Length: 457
Ligand code: FAD
Image (cartoon, rainbow, N blue to C red; front, side, top):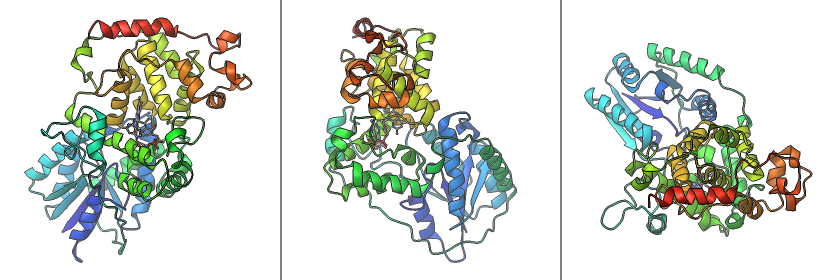
């Protein structure tokens, strides 16, 4: 019997339910086989997340040699798995961690249908979140739409235990199938096309754990206040590792919980937002295309390609917005406070459809997670569940003064403002400082945004 562990965005050995189950089931005469499905439908060539993910897969492929080689198959679900089954035979069993929303949910449904058609046994597990989409429900069994009561229940529920894998054996490289050779070739070609990036030195588990331990030691204590200041490392910056599954959310949760740091409760609450948004994504499968609140589906967004371009390259004339977009474009990551500011600016100040911003983030973020990103954008656009009310509009200058009071973050990303005094840096044009003239008058834009929503209320 061959026990096939299918890896996806769970590229690790510890706290890996599918892997643990396969190892537990394996008899001495059995084979353990690691598999990665290269699904062209999922490739996002040219995006930061594509490169980051496959660099991590390449790292993981090397790691797998400690236990069993990682094999690749290529094609749609139907093509790739049917080819494998035809070649390898029926004496196999599959183990995988499944997705509960978005593309991954549909893909897993296709896979399960195919396995059942071929009468291949499989075991599926929940792995990406602390609680599944069904764990936290209202007393009447319906899903929550508001975070606070959801969290009240979430926090009381027992969390999964954390298990490190004890590697006891190494299997010989046995399987040499044609479909694996084909997959390997495609993977090798794909890897050669990945571009160098800001994160190249921090791929993999060692860097992830180092980042986590450093944050817990130095950052968690003051997380409550420091997490809103983009110029300092006040947040964990673990989102890329959680995205590709190098670190398990369960490991992060237990590590945070085992400290006595002051910021612990706030941090754990942020982890709950991640679960909340995946639950929302599951119950609103069309949320990528449509406003969750039906009454706002008729909003007339501005057609403003010039404004969108200025926003995307960081040339709006609002230094905090520009610095944030430069951080995103350069590093593939953006601080949470800044994600809120730039999203609000695009939607409320420029009146541009939130979907355009969501798409731009999906191309630039290395931690892109559809549920969290759409959740964040629909929050900022006031169209989602538990979203910011449409009349409470961020003033980018006030946000800048509050969260980058000394202008340190702005100076880091906008060299032409490096010598500008803190009191002038948030609105340079007002002080005749040479910088881009703001592309929009915030006061007027605010009124227009309120009007846009009000007529549908
Ligand atoms: P920390 O403050 O250290 O938080 C710890 C972890 O909690 C994060 O790694 C993340 O997994 C989770 N988390 C924190 N805040 C949120 C939140 N508001 N929603 C969901 N999970 C959260 N997060 C993504 O992981 N991927 C995205 O594509 C994404 N897009 C966003 C788009 C917008 C418009 C907004 C407003 C937020 C978005 N977020 C997204 C949420 C949040 O900005 C990031 O998770 C956070 O900035 C990651 O940095 P960190 O790991 O240092 O966070």
